Amino acid sequence: MPQVFIGVGSNVERDTSIRAGVADLRAHYGELLLSSVYESEAVGFAGDAFYNLVVGFDTQESVDSVANVLAAIEDRNGRVRGGGKFAPRTLDLDLLLYGDEIISTARFHVPRDEILRYAFVLWPLAEIAPDLRHPEAGKTFAQLWGRFDKDGPVLRPVVFSWQVPTTEGTGPDIL
Image (cartoon, rainbow, N blue to C red; front, side, top):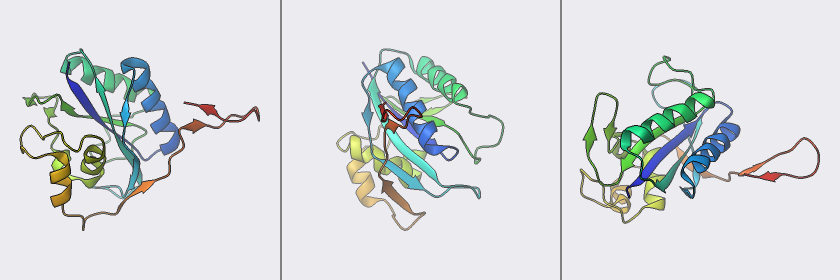
């Protein structure tokens, strides 16, 4: 059963969008492996900062099925398409890895190229899968992160509450 890793990001209603996206992933795939949440500047456009994390899970679904589920979750959470690659997002779910497979279609490339280009993808991936090897580069994610040029855009871990505040005054609900 392949282990799948998904990049999760949001810069529109970040807390709410991240919680909802992760809840939808958990509802569909069950137990999830979650990295810390990181804050990063918008890349490629002027916009609000993003929250990013990486989520891992095992599935028997095909890679196309996983991609379809991710798109449906994005849509349910207010994702507006057609605004260009670099635009604000309520929820962005990127298929980073599908086992150790190398897959290139018109729709996606796995492993996703952004793993080696952006700290907001590589750092959380190295956090939760340090000994896993990049299928093309052949190095572990810990090795790749150790050699990564960290002089780029600022990236910092944030304290993220997975609790959803309630309006009834009875205390928070746990996601």
